[in-house]
Amino acid sequence: MIKVNENFLELQDSYLFSTIANKVADFTSKNPDKKVIKLGIGDVTRPIVPVVVEAMKKAIDEEGKQETFRGYGPERGYDFLREKIAEFDYRKRGVNISIDEIFVSDGAKCDCGNIGDILGINNTVAITDPVYPVYLDTNVMFGRAGKYDKKIGAYEKIIYMPINEENGFIPQFPKTIPDMIYLCLPNNPTGTTLNKIELKKWVDYAKENKSLILYDSAYEAFISDKDVPHSIYEIDGAKEVAIEFRSFSKTAGFTGLRCAYTIIPKELKAYTNDGKEIYLNGLWNRRQGTKFNRCVLSCTTCCRSYLYRWGAKTD
Image (cartoon, rainbow, N blue to C red; front, side, top):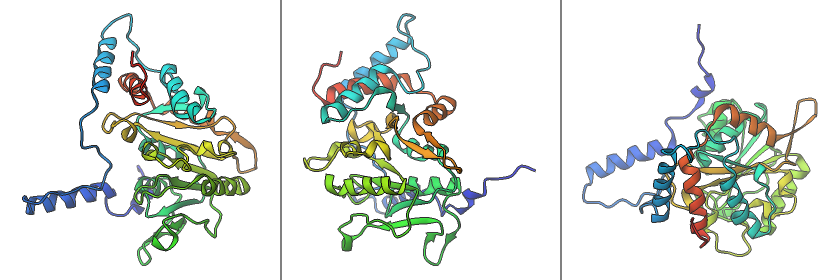
């Protein structure tokens, strides 16, 4: 008899953004004269910039010629794109990230959810409240959340870190030490940022407790304050305790094109049940090689988008 993954039965209602979309559709159908400002799923409202459109056309032309046809890409993504990411998003900010620590993917949302594949099922998980729903829902699917308590509106095994007006929308260290800590900065949905001093406290906390920070910096392109880091790796010691997720959706108006990347430093370790150290870079590479293949068009287009963003030539 085929069995279902019963963890899915612990999910509450439908996916949050689907619920929001249904409510918006219902409201607009009943109020056709109203203009709705949508603050749900982070989609764009303007067309893709011309340089990206041209890059996609060129990429399609390359796929139609024998001498430039690419086929499946390498497991971590093409070198030409990863070199640009390392140069423009990290080295220009004084951060040394090598290209074999960069994994190109089909979206930060996918990576935020899929990263749980290489992490232990019994890890305790800390999330901010409110939070981007993918962090919570995917851990429910993995079985890390436990049962849902309808009386208090929370999962029994999840460590919630409230962010509200009382604490300045800044997450505080939880009383129970978590194994996995999700931080989204600038935060979705509050927009909160942490300066270097505040973020250093989280890095030190993770190092002291051998915790892992899952750092979603999809909105880093909106940072203008010089004291607010664009990457957690601007903080000393962060490469020992953090995985960083980046998205082209917000950086280059890429929603729908599905391209992003994740940084897993080579010195980043986790542990087996008997305390043996395991490096996560190799595990993620093995996972990606087995379950995922990159999009050739997005790789070519993303590379040109990076050059466009930084004012460089796009050829």
